[in-house]
Length: 138
Figure 1 (cartoon, rainbow, N blue to C red):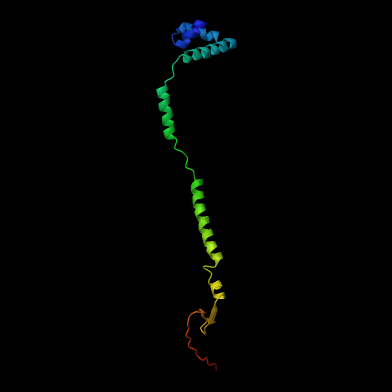
Figure 2 (cartoon, rainbow, N blue to C red):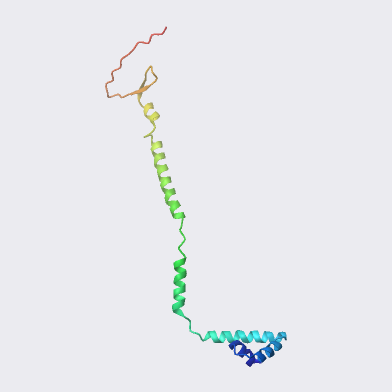
């Protein structure tokens, strides 16, 4: 029977031998025996084949070229977040130092409130000429 199985694997089996093999495979133990023989034959035949390293190398290169590296978004996000944090910190530092705070500058100076509601700072080292107008109330 092993000869018939080998002829079946080699595809050289005749019609009468194929019918005999089918009748033999009706028994479950024979079917299991044939499966084991086919597996052994497959492993034996393919273990002696030399691998095609050139084709494997080309296949690996194609897979590498098709797989583009994933873009990492976090470094970009961190870069912009750092710029925003630095900018906010710079503006906050200027605000705390009082450089942009006009109210603090006016508190440390002598000021004059004019009749129209505007406030003018008076610097101590400079001469200031004011024209006084008499406000007449009726």
